[in-house]
Image (cartoon, rainbow, N blue to C red):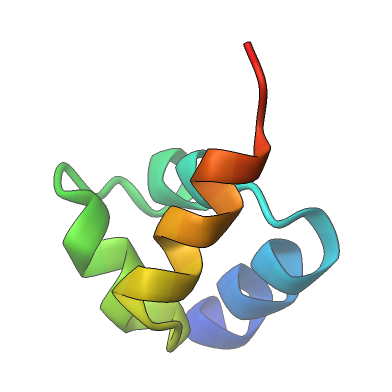
Length: 51
């Protein structure tokens, strides 16, 4: 259930950092593997966010 909820949160929000915090992961790579997305996809999402 934990993985399913994390994956659904990610798919709805596309906020990988939020999922990372919810899961208590220290490394973003762990979260990426956990929710089943590719690192390249995560980087693409990160680049789309303007600060």
